[in-house]
Length: 100
Image (cartoon, rainbow, N blue to C red):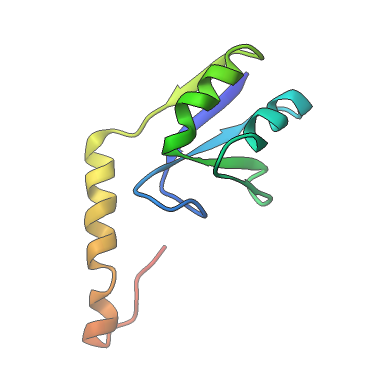
């Protein structure tokens, strides 16, 4: 099974991206590498893919294996946007940054 989970971007630009994880399969890897934007995240042993590539990714992967797609709740996305907008405040005020 291929797992695709919406996440806060690590290497891909944008508000959200998708983390693709699966047991090794060269056919899946080739489908991911064919996308415009994809990064292998060695520590997570998964691929990060941008939003614009999701439709093409789903089209190609449904021919290979079952897919489990996890999308974030809209509230989570809004919270991430707010957090990104205010992350500069501790530096501005001269306070230690409380990043997790």
